[in-house]
Image 1 (spheres, rainbow, N blue to C red):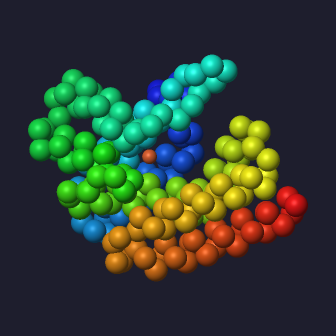
Image 2 (cartoon, rainbow, N blue to C red):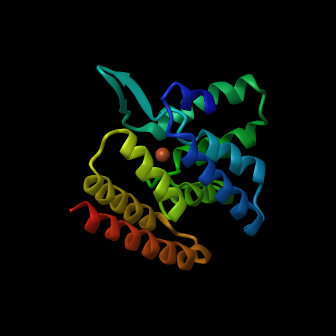
Length: 182
Ligand SMILES: [Fe+2]
């Protein structure tokens, strides 16, 4: 995953680290297999961009492309078949297109959401958008949309309170930025 980030084919590492921290915490909270959760989080976005004229562009269906990329390595590393199935489903289900079939996959989806449902994640994301030369006001609006989208993905009852609280903090920060940027 780190190599993919260096090649600019995966999201910036700062966001991955936030999801990893949350994944570790949630694996303990819900008594899930931490190794499978971390593998799922690390590999979820391993194919997110492709080279295009003048830079990189986001790929469509990055969940499936990431799963296919990860599958080659899981086979090469001789991962247990059932474990590999859980990891691959977690990758495919880390947004809303595919249903998570295990507790671990459900946690991977939630950990990914906290990239945008946390102040540290939003600050990192705003920094990334700044590096891409996106105007501040546009970046704040984009980050708000991402946070709202992720809030809609939260399905574990035990996570709704924290997600809602974080969402409110994120919106407050982004609204303040929007006011300054006008
Ligand atoms: Fe993703």
